[in-house]
Each structure stands twice: as C-alpha cells, then as structure tokens.
Image 1 (cartoon, helix red, strand yellow):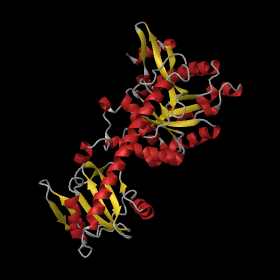
Image 2: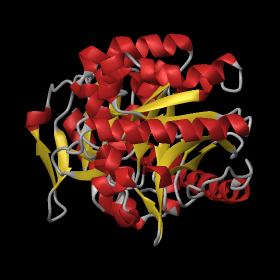
Image 3: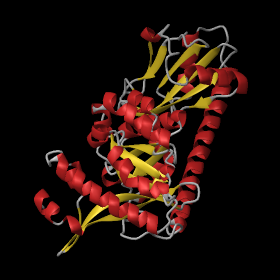
Image 4: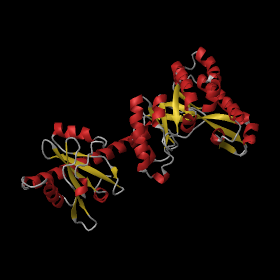
Length: 406
C-alpha cells in the first residue's frame, strides 16, 4: 500500500489495543496502541508506515497525532487505570522537547482521567543511540513528570548497554520474533541474560513482545520477563478485554515451565552427586605423595565417561596443574601450557571459590560455550583441599545424552 493512500484514508485509521500481561497475577496491566486501517477489503496493519524513514516525517507525525488522540479518548472514556504504551518518534521528541505530546495529554491530566505515570513512551533503540546526546535531557524531564520511558527492540543488534543504563529507562522491551521456528539461539540468550541483570540493577521492567509460540513464552519467562505481549496470549483488538482473559492459559504454561525447571535442577543435583561420589572414591585410593598432574590423570581415567578436561587451581585462580584433555581417540594427554594460567577473571570464579570454602561442596556451572571447542559445556568445580580446587569440564555430547541437562 502506498503511503499517500494511507494519508488519504486518515479518517479510517483507528487505534487497536495490544494487551500487556504481567507475570505476578497473569492479568492485563496495560495496552500498547497500534495502528489499523479500516479498508474496504478488511482491517490492515500499518505499523510499517511509522517505521519507514523514507516517508516524510510530517506525514508520520500527522498520522501519529491522529492515532494518539483517538487512543487517549478511548482510555479516558473507559476510565482505564493501567499502562498506556505509545510508540514515539525520537526525532519528534527532540524537535519540540516533547511539548506536542504533553499538550495532547494535558487536558486529561488536568481533569484527572489519566495520570502521567500511566503513560509509557516507547522509543526505538537504534534511534536512542543515534540521538543519545540530544534526547537524554528530554527523557529526564519527561520522567520527572512521572511519564515512563520504554526502549524498544533491545538486543536485536549490538546493544550499547552502557547508554541504556545511563538513560535509566523504566521499561526494556525485547522482541522474540527473531526466534525462528521455535529455536532458541544461545547467542541471543547471552545478550538477554545481560539485559536481565541490567534491568535489575537500574530498576527497569523487562517486557518481551512478539510472543507467538509456547517456546517463545518459555524463553521470555526464563529470561526474567515481568511483562508479556503477543498473539500467543492475545492479539490486538479495537476494544479492551477482561483483565483475567489469559490467566488460565498463562498459569498452565507457567506451571509447565516450573515443572521442567525443577526436573533440570534435580538432574543437575544428581549429576553433581555422582561426580562427588566418584571423585571421592578416586581420591581415597590415590597416593598423596604424587604430583598434581599425576592426580588429575588418575581422576581423568576414573571419570572418563563424564569429562573431557581436568585441571587444578588455587584460591586466587592460578592454575597449579597442567590440563589433562581427552583427544578424539579417547586418550588422555597432559598439556603443560595450562600451568600457571590465571582464571580469576572468569565470571563467578571468585564467588564460586568462596562458596566452596563456606559450603564445603562442589558447584556445577550453567551451560556456557567453551572457547577451544566452540560447543556448550558445563564445568564441575570441587575443593580437594583448603586451597586447591579441581575443575572438570563436561562435554555437550554427555549432557545431551542425559535427561534435562541441556
């Protein structure tokens, strides 16, 4: 459809309302305003119109004004008390410091049918980074009034997390439609785990949108989403829905997620116990007068079904042994180049050392990608003395063959 055709049909452009659900009570806590065109051949989505920067900004702003005015009238008439999510052009926000939007909402603020803190202005991440210097003061001003700021499409490109942190958005919004055919790329998983940590530190809420499948909902849940959107839950409509209209489905799905995670935790605990039992048996019958390299060779042979690499570090992260690694033929070989490497820079290394000292037990890591093998593995760390710790790397092949370890 041609942009001019859309403008000619401006009076037929109406707001639809896409529900936003929360994790705590599984109820509707707000709506995102999206554009629809009532055409002769049916209702059409025209979100593309606002994202196409080749269309003159005057056209996009005029249609946006029209859409926002109708949406605000709808919110006010319904005495809606939840969140109102408006997608907004960052350049327009900079151009007039948000005054045009403030003038539009002021009548509703004055008669108290709408509150500032109900409004969320969503800005595209790329635009925020492009106009960071110009926009940060505008956002600070709007937030001082109580208006909340959302940053959309975070994590789909090389996110500049430091800039996001400095802006202190209220909502960080992640679209999961990139998860093609229900696959869950670990590349994105690492990015979104970073966003989860960032949101906790700055007090932002994670909103995952574009959820169209069960697996995408699971992905959002596992990555700390508080808010959820998408056709798997409910599609946008021109009227509001009952706040608990999706509670039953969400509760059922969440229970499934919880059951699955419990099984994973049980499997990890069982693996840890197996490794501890085997390792203790080996250490009990190993001569204490031998070298650390001799020790890890002995352990490697006894635990060969579980691991492909073993080494020993001290409490400061300095490697005290060589690496013993299994080659493609299953033969264990010592690699001296690992001796005296320092691993204290690795995430959670020192924290895990302290935990092992206090708890007197081993720790099984999360899944992560081994640099040398370029495959996902887990590492089991175990204290073998007051100052020495054995690290055993478990290959993906073994984890895949076991239930609930991937």
